[in-house]
Length: 595
Image (cartoon, rainbow, N blue to C red; front, side, top):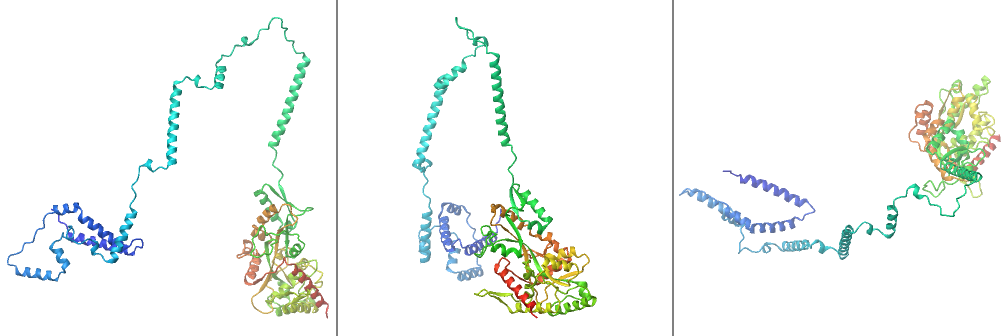
């Protein structure tokens, strides 16, 4: 006989119920009060069911524990225990199955509920009534009228088709054919006559046909040959039109400055573009109007002012309403070039860091050159009118190094308002000229001519662009030079300008869409273009150095200078800056001529 540990299972059921109740309390999807009402109703139904009553009656009667006769101590303990129990527990002990058996005298379930429980039970009952599914009708009863009609029509069509098929099986094949097919079948069924039966007998009195003369036969042969020849030419021309070579690629004319600026790299990018776009060919515009124009900062304002550039607004989104005229390709930072050997011969172990040190170094170089009678100049300017970047390169950096701007704009009468640091820079350069610290021809020489003099060892110090480092290194084989930031008015954070190369679409271009495609392709090659010409920083938005910068010590130093300085944004496309440069050149010329 198997004995069950009832207390063990009771504890398990109690733990499960407690965890389930905690889940109901924590869950937001189940109302615990509503669940209790529903559970109570369900338990009442289970208790009143016939199955549970039969099960209770089939259970063996509980054996009553034997009590020892005359055991007064046990009777007293039971009496004491019963006194401690509540009335509810006394009823349970008296009859354990009383809660499960339905009682006729027991009050209805709703009578034991409070007002809130009754309303909750009413809502639950209404909800259950609403959720009762409607009795389902048969399939055909739920079909719509239109669907029933379609089904009826389909049945009729199937019935008629079956009827026709059965009747056709009984009808001979020829009777099922139409009149036209019957005639065709009759002609096909007649056996073909033999060759001797096809010959029509000549009636009596009919003359035999005359044979065609040889001349007529020759004429027929010539006509046939001519027809064949004409057909051959027509067919060959048609085939040649089909298998003709593809049309000539569309030419995109590019200004010659593209090849002059980027050298061999320009040919490489052209070949790559033509390989990716077989329908286009890049052509140098020698006598034609270019579709794509390449230029630097010196020509930007002039091209915009003369309307030579088309606006890129249809292709490029801008946050302002101003038109955008070109895409920036390569950027160069302004640097201070100095000849290490010349400065050391003059007794200077390091380059100048401030403007005062710069003056002392220049004077020492001039004194050393005068003693050795060598034609060496401490500093030089290239402010020729033929150089549109002269003022921007040789004057503006001295003002920017002080942390100020060059001018505050034009007045209503067209006068340029220079800032105090700009006026001081004019006087500073004029004083250097009067002391003989500048190379002669400041307003006749261009920046390129000054670079050539520096590469020859005739100029000790010079302001130039990082674009010129390769030119100086390749042209000055025996020159030991280095670069640094522009000497400032006082020690502090450097402030430098940036120049660059741009590309835009010509306003006279007849194929602007194709020109824009080539322009976007070239703009995507910024790092390769910068590596080809040794540009530092390389891009207007550069945040990390390229491989060509990290591999070259001179370029690495230029990158460190750029990274440690504040960068000035110069509006090179503004024509007013070109006019301001012209006025500053005139002021400098007047200051140089004054005694």
